Each structure stands twice: as C-alpha cells, then as structure tokens.
Image 1 (cartoon, rainbow, N blue to C red):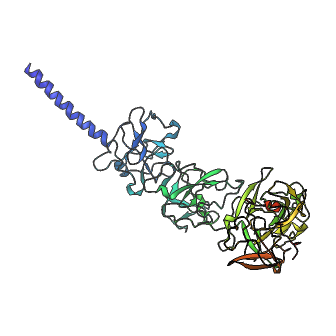
Image 2 (image 1 turned 135 degrees about the horizontal axis):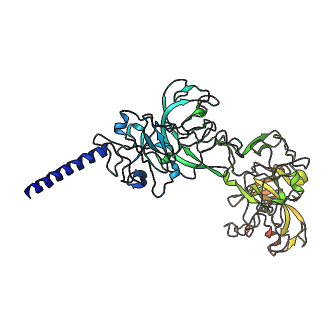
Image 3 (image 1 turned 90 degrees about the vertical axis):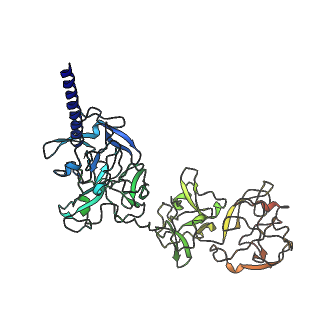
Length: 536
C-alpha cells in the first residue's frame, strides 16, 4: 500500500514537470492552433486587431511587400510564424481574405489580404494575450488589423523602365518606405496636384485607368505611427478620393502585382512620387478665377469669364429673374459657374454673386442680382471672342457687365395700389425704362423739387424713411448715361445725387428690387421714375 502511494506521488510529479515543460515549449514554438484560429479582438489601444483564438496578437511585416515572407533565420526567433492547416475565422472576417504560402524553408504560413501573419516573441517568449508590444518595432512591424486603409512597406523602388531608384528618384539602390493599400498596392501622389485638389483626373474619368484614384468613402485603420489628422476625403466628380497631407492618392494602372512601384519613373522620375510620413504638405490651391475683371480699350474694366469673354446684364431682369427665354437665348446664352472664384487682387466681391434656378431647371450666375449672359452675334449660340464687346447697348437694354454704381431697369410700372401704369402714369400695360441703383432698386424724382433743390426732406430727416434720399459715388455708368448730367447736392449736411437737376430718392415701401410702387403715391405722377428722357 505504501509502495503504491509512493508510485502515485512520483507519477504526479513527473506529470507536473511535463506540463510546465510543454507550456514553455508551446510559448516559444507554438503548435498549429485549433479551429476558429483567427478572430477580431477589441484592443484598448489599437481598436480592432487580429489575434488567434487565445487573444494573442498577430502582426504584419512591412518588408513582405510581394506577399512572400522575408523574415528568415534569426528573424523568426522574435517573430514566429502563424499557421493553421484548417484555419477558420471569427465573426467579422471573411475566409476569402486568408491564404497560405509555402516559405523558403518549406514550412507553411497563413496570410491575411496577402500579408504573412506572425506572432511577436520578445526575450521572454511569445506575448501574452492582449499584449501589443510588437507595434512599430523597428518601424517595420505592425499589429494586424482587419480594416487598414493605409499600410506601410519598405522596399526597393523599381520603375516601369526597369531601373532601381532611391527615395529621391535618382538611380540607385535603397529600401524606400512608402504607403500601400490594405492589399499591398502602391499609392502615389501627383506633383501637379494641390491641397485636397485633384488636377489630374478628367471630368469624365477617361484617364482614370492610367492613374486610378484611391477611392475611400472614409478613413479606415492606419498604423499607429501615422496621424488621422493628416488624411481627408475629397470628392472627384461623384467619387471620393483619400488624401494625405493634402495630396490626393492614386494607384498606377500598370502596377499589376502587389509590391510593384513602377509609377515612380513615369513619365519621368519624381512626377508621381510615392508617399510616406516624410511627404511635405501639398501646396495651397492656386486660385483659378472663374470670373475676372478684364480691361477693354473702349469700355474700361468689364466683368468676363475665365477666358476673358465679356458678360452682359439685361435691363428687363430688373427683378432678379431671367426674362431672356426661347430664341433670345440663341443670341444671349446664360453664364453659369458652379463655383465663383476671383483673383486675389480684384475689386469684385464673392458676396455680390449668386445662383438662380431657371424655369427649365438650368442654373445661371447673377451679379448684384442681375443674371449674367454671353453675347452670340449671329444668334447661333457661338459666343463672341475674348476682347470683343459687341453686345453693349443693343436695343437699349443690354449692357456689358461692370461694377456699375447705377443701372437701368426695363419693365411694367406697378403702383402701390396694384395697378399697372405706362410711362405717362396712366393706367395701362407697357414697359418703361427707369434708373435703379446697382442692386436694382428704383430711383424717383419729386415734381415739387426745384433744380438741384430738395423741397421734400425735413431738416430733421423725420420723413426720410418714406422717401429716402439717394447718393452714390458715380464712377461706373451704363454707356447710354452721361455722367455730366449728375451732381451731388447738400441736404441739411447730407449728400444727395441729382440727375438733370432732379434730386433722386428711393421709395421706402419698395421692399424688393424691381418694385415701382412709388409711381402711384400719393397719386400717379407725383413721384415719377427717372431715365435719360427726364427733362431738366
């Protein structure tokens, strides 16, 4: 009986010794793990990462650019390979993203999206579950994640010309560090791009096959050495492109295999550089004006499109809507730019431009509320050339666009009583020509004023809100108006503009541009509109 107890005790000690011996061996040289061998684990530092089913972290090696493992010999002591012959995956992972390679030593290794998988084994053995000490070791080892938008690789640059290049695009040998996508395809910048501005891709994407944009709706995971603040997503037509430090990112269409970086020599070295954390920020976009001030020998400073083609205002659009329709548009095509860009040194202000939607659904750009047009002399839609201003003054209602201080409206007079009036202030239909300010607000005279003498405004300006006096610095006028007909008069210390001796006023109840309500107050003709036919 005593011998039996001694035997059992001895066998128990041997078993314990074998347990600890096996445990140590497994930690340094792990055997293939069981089914369900790769899972997504939520790590407090790095978010979702790939681990085995024990929670031990898996890693990518940035030098495995071609999909083969280049971690050999002594490297494997610190970075043991991961392999499961009957690999299965946990929730959120796709089996199709995993593969198996045969290493140079004949052993097998699992891959994820083409990246060979490793453990990390510091001096004390393979990491414990939850540890991620291998992240960024040597700047080439990174925690494996399921959703990298960007990965970092280190490899020789080999151009489409078959030559080796250094990271400064000179012929030579060097392992360059650069960004790739989640599957190891090289990403490039274009030297002619600007901050968050793609200057390469055609509007119809006809050249996209040569340098495909790197489409990403949003930024996924990135290595911990990078900052998400350096990335952004821009819109290119109806697609989204990822940028880094303002540089839009592209593939090279001829990089047929993972690890290829042929684009570095196309069309010459450095035009399409690789991208890494040392990439300097993209330059601010050059302002390319869509609307400009151009100098004309006859008309002075005029408003034109980016090509210098004259733009025009139509007096009939005094209320801010486009009244040029049908055949009119053959001679006066609308001008529209999706984005108003002005030169840095310009007298124009973006605030003066807007967009209206036309009856047919199209869009038109306006300036100070006036819709803008081109002129097509032959009424065939063919716009006059840059430098030509043949449309000014046509029919007395078309004027080359300028930063006018005073403009001319043309429309039906409608009094505050809601009745239509003609130019004689009799009830009736008919369009009348009248002066407005630059923004289309009607100007009036008062029949009881004398030449250059305001007989209406009280000395305390108590009635000025009813008929406010009008004044502006007359620098720019339509070509049909003579500046010498204007004068500035003094009204109890304030300035008022007069035309042919008639002091000019607004009507306080004209709340919108194009209103002419004052023509019937207090009776028709007491406050007439003003135009070139106004008598002295």
